[in-house]
Length: 197
Image (cartoon, rainbow, N blue to C red; front, side, top):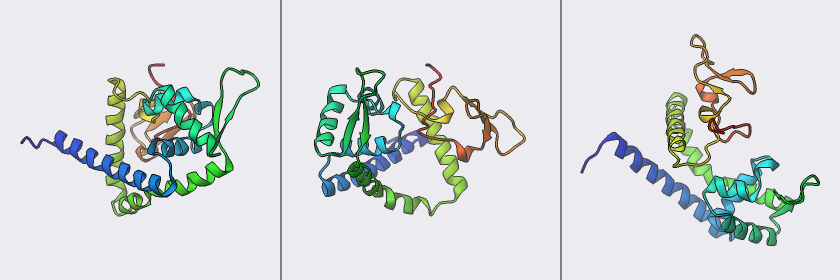
């Protein structure tokens, strides 16, 4: 069996993915929602209204609009979210968590506590290097069409990598007009604009 570093990384990512799925699944059993319904609730709590359309969720989670609509229907029936129809365009609607949904989102987000407790044990520099590597891997997968949406600085039109080399804050965001370091690179930025768009 070939044990190259690439294969070790894939195996490690598989294990981490399994841990995340297991932690989320344990949460679903406690509250009676499916893993995708939980992921939708967590997505909605951290994103602005214009990113909360059914089509956005379908693209974000690589699902059909029909699958998303089914999950949304159940969450609406459970009074965890509501549909907002803007006055300027009655053809579209945004999804917004109700107070009950927002409270549940806070409770659900505890799924990652055991994961975070372990991450706190590692040195910051090691975590920053790992995070940067993972973001570059995600960007590469996105450029090759394997991941549809990444929403990270390093794959954003506004990002200038190593805009200056003599400072610790080497990168530059053209939108916010600020320099920042590797540790400040964002994942899931609401100002993200795909370089291909």
